[in-house]
Length: 231
Image (cartoon, rainbow, N blue to C red):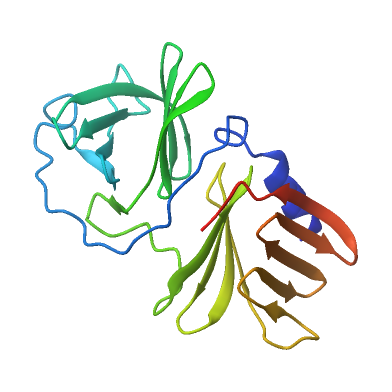
């Protein structure tokens, strides 16, 4: 586990190297029914992924001989303006498209536009789906909701539960790798409060407060990152 944690930190790439991003808390909603006809370039191309935010509908389209990796397509909901940019990089369900000095990044958790390395647009993804309409955005286990959300340089951390907090879930912003550890009310194993969460799995301890995310193993601190936003 020690090696896995170090690899996750070492491979933080597309987003972690950029300016901080401040997502809003994910809200439960029903995906909009919307025709995708004519969205993708080429007559035979169709979206393989779709992402919805408050202001945008974004799509990842199949590639062709000119751009085999595929295309990023974004439509503004208010005026239906569409941009199409060839994909530059794919990492799991995180996608990067570049046009000059402007970078477009989308994942099941956030949509970002960067200009000269600075964030100019950021929105939380409300819904994300595969080509068959199956959702790929579920953060919490079935029957649970997001109770708290924290953003650090490398991770989005969710505290999930129903009437009380039950699970610590961390998403690596570079590759969407998930770490899920149950919270425990026992003082000897874990601690739950409104401003501090502790989860322990084996010799690894995960501590989240309003100020810092800390991961340690057998007393050695492996990760310590400032909380940039707390919801």
